[in-house]
Image 1 (tube, one colour):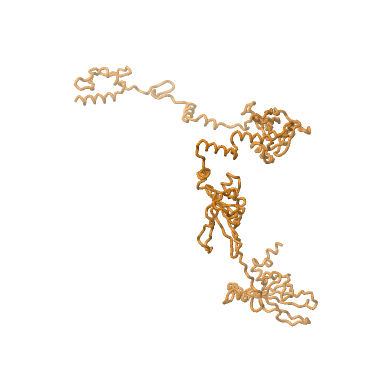
Image 2: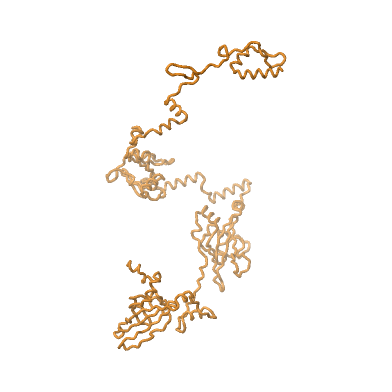
Length: 582
């Protein structure tokens, strides 16, 4: 019952509200029987706002001039207030209002945007357009040297820098250690006049390979830097190619002296002998040259491709693969047999060993001989010939490792002198058929030369089926220049099914010639083209030669004209549209 009573009290407190609960908590005290449970007090709770009762106040009232109003309802907001509240609903209402504002009709000027001290002029002056742009050229001048036994002139290298912003020129000489010559700045930065007095020196006066005179001294331009070359290329000017630097006798001797001081030169034979003698005296084991060469160049082999033209009886060209072993300077030559070459499968042509340029036999076995005639890597060049025991073997190619080896250590391009040894393509000569002897047709005679059992030539069946029975006739006259043949008239009949031509002579009174067949129906060759007559070779106005007689076509019959007009795509002279365009 106590628990149920406590739950009832809690529900009553929630119903009354937080203000009523706080007021009645003062009259409650803890239960003595159940810990954590409050007991209901004996005093009646009071309202929190000081009212005497819990009655709800009326919300309607009456005001003069307004009538009945609801005192619990706030006054209605104005339109401006509602519009401002509607704008505040969006986070970017200022940007939205700015975008909806009307734009000015005239565009803003640069004076309204950029301050006066930050504006660029429309035509930029040189000091602004070419600010910090310097054209640098490399050159030298020759200086006379007196009272020196080892040199009479000296080349002094200088750097010429032309400043684009104000057209000034400066020159300086790179300093050389312990040269004894005052070096450094030659020309500070003036505007140098030209030698002829026509203005000042500009960018057009500098070209690689040209000379320029500054204050009476002539300088030879040898090159320029990358920016200078790019600047001239952008303006469409060829500045020229860089030239190698020239060295005088003093510079050559100075570099040689510095190289000697740093140990860049190999020891002489005398110094090497003295060094070896000192090692023998001190008891140190001498270094084995062959062992050192083997350790450094083991498994490094130069590979060449070669051939030998055997000029003996029944000899032929033999191809080889030559191996040069860098570990011990020995050579091995193997034969490169092709498939079905007919040679024995023994590829070794020369067993691995030293190869001498000149072979000789010692009369005294065991006698020491000089090995100066051994082939070395520098003796093997692609395109050259080497002597292999009296046989002239030609080297014509090498592999990639050999090419890289010579390019790295000797600066030699072996592929530049390679030889093309590929066989020429076999050209089979085809015999021409014999000329036609006049018996039978030319096709029948040609088939007799192509096969043992000749067959009749194939005919165009479609052409035979379509054009069978067609005969196209043209009227012609003989134009051989003879007066008695001017009055003769002929009919040239063309049969499109077999491309055969027949010529008939018409009867003419008092002509002295009988009418009838002038040329039998057969295929006739056109002497002008060398091919058989075709229908397109016959048209009004042309002259054709048949049986060594010229015939001029005068006209064609109605059936022939209709046939040609139906096939105007094949006969352009019968196309009315083409004739109208002409």
